[in-house]
Length: 104
Image (spheres, one colour):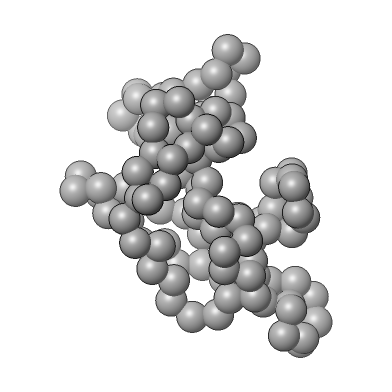
């Protein structure tokens, strides 16, 4: 994801997508950024994990929206290159805005 507005993810751009492997790993290739050739035009990268898959497993809230968890949205502002987010864990308490997620 490319964060476009502080405090909201309504206008964020999807830069790429993938599925989590059986061992819990994943790799995403994507591109993004804001208009212009300025140093601040590079994407503000974060990762969103949506809790659903094509095998019938789906975690939703009370109004049937997919639940998801985000890595911190502004830890990698104006980023270019390969990003390794390392290992992280999310809990079953993830909300539809990722606000109750635990990362480590």
